[in-house]
Image (tube, rainbow, N blue to C red):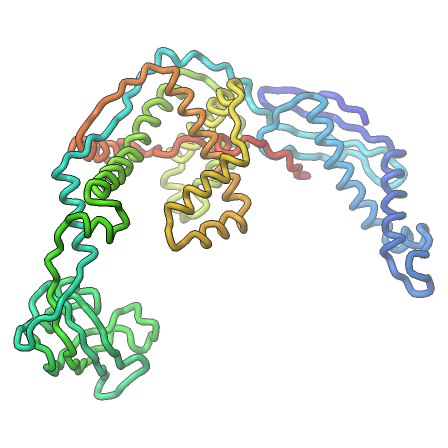
Length: 456
């Protein structure tokens, strides 16, 4: 194989590759021998079909198969030989091919730009730590207790009020006729939540145990049976019981019901949960503050094919008119993401950062533990979607890079309360203030560069 650089302009390099016809013939002979074991033709015993007979019948397709394999092998070797870092998919332009001839082709390659990193020591950013006050924790505990209400029977002559639980059977009809699913037994609804059918709850206010209540409601527009959607329906309800919410005391017993050791342990868990929720959003703000400085302080030439691929990925679910409407902004964002991806990758490689398979497995285990009752679903998702594990690996890699950068810059730690955190997050999320919440491109989250070849 002979490889020459035919031209080099900017980030685009064209290689001229020549493969001797003898190598092609050797590959053809090897493939014919393989097929001799597989091909069954009338008049020949299995495995005894002469290669020349196989060639006479399948020669063209075999040659095409061999050439494709040779192109893949030699193009990869050519790129490695010239030590090129490719961006996207190289293109092949066949110049000469055919059985009994040398194989000549040109390989058009868009290369990754050389990235010269500047020092990060002059960068400044703020890291936030959220202090959760006792009032916020107490409010959250009340919210948890309301979500875990327990009810007790009311006296038989007591009427149902908002907040009570009503237990009933019903028979429903439309124009006097029953329909599939028109009967319900032991239905429980909490008055005031309006979760059954719109306006249904309020018609049950004032009922007592053993009452029969007839009321009207409209079936939802998204009813599984289309012919029943938006139909006015009459319900005859037999009231089985009225229950009032129990007064819940937020104490050690309640904490144990919630899976904590005692009330202090529960408060600690709640504090960590609230703080974690704020920290996640605030870390994104800190990250953007750092990335903006990195982007502004570096100049990098970007391959057009990477920009096109990034735009395609970003806009694949958009309508054509939306693509056109936001074309300029999408291109700007794509360039920003690719540029940052290249810079962060370079920083990660310079510092020999890697993510092991064990680290990926540990992160998956964390996700499994964080979703009790759905462990099997989470595990199967990663087992059936290798790309999800690769994406997770990329995210962990990016986290490592960002943590290292934070250790090198002038990072100020600031303690704030929840109200201050909400104000900062709200300001960050204002329209037109931050339209680039995820600025790093897929190239950052997947270190391995594609060497897939496409032919012109």
